[in-house]
Amino acid sequence: MFGKPVIATSMFLGLALVGAATYTLAKPSFKMVYGSPESKVSNVAYTGAYTEGGSVVTVPPEIKPVPQSKTHHVRLDLTHKTVEIADGVKFEGWTFGDSIPGPTVHVRQGDKVFFSMTNRSGDDAAVTFPMPHSIDFHSAMVNPLDKYRTIGAGQTLEFEWVANYPGVFMYHCGTPMLLHHMVMGMYGAVVVDPAEGWPDKADREYVLVQSEFYTKPKDPSTPNLLVADVDSAMKKTPSHVTFNGKVGRHVDEPLKALPGERVRLYVMNVGPTDTSSFHVVGTIFDKVYLDGNPKNLLRGMQTVLLGSSNGAVVEFVVPEAGKYPIVDHEFADASMGALGFIDATDGKGPKTPAAH
Ligand SMILES: [Cu+2]
Image (cartoon, rainbow, N blue to C red; front, side, top):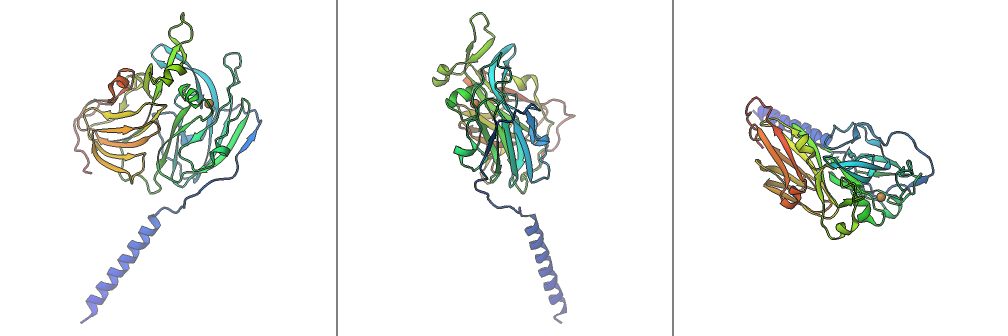
């Protein structure tokens, strides 16, 4: 007479054990790593590509899935380059990986990054003056006096770090005068996926790096060739505010989506000084993870306030076919260029948004 309950109890225990085992296997297998071996500086004259790292290193707004490997070799070389920060407006800047902002590094929590960079600011000394530079990864937990040391033109720095926390982090040059190096364009983003993945599946994923430029004409006769103006940077009076390094970049190249799709934006406000009141007109942020950590969850946000060097993961559903402005709702900043679009006009009609 006890047969059925005993069998039922055994089945229940068996299922519970299977469930526990499955849960255990699904848990990430990594532990926090503090510090790393001492960095290495050499005089190796590297002449290859300015960036290395395959799909781990991409230029915003692109972001690709992280390879399954637990280790990644990443190179971001330092260059001096003239870039376009508004239509027809050139800026003589300094870069990581030859772009402003620098490439996005995309890894997974628990992964190790073997990083190298060569200071190639003197490669074309006829055009630019070689400068000492460094890198500061907000995504790393290491001794800054060692890993974030300044190297001169022609030198190579190598060190490693482990991504302990998921998030949207900043990297930047930390060489004095730091504000000057930041204003020149030496910054970018690191996206660290949670070890267990993001809680929701996104249909579209983009990186947005917001930054201010403080400029003046290089010469009165060339008003569209600009150089950095540290005085206006000290007064916090930018001339341009951009998403991904150019006024109106995502007006001309809107971020594509379809009605009903879930969009995930990895937003990084690098400053160097200003805040961002990040907002997308026409939708509400279903989920916001402050600094990109899924444990820092906010729901139903209209705007997310990002201090200088704050990041966020912002997720929303495109409610219907249309074009949705992306703005810094500090409207002086939007007027100076912090404006773009999510273009969802190509859809074949509204789909039912996923329930979350
Ligand atoms: Cu620098």
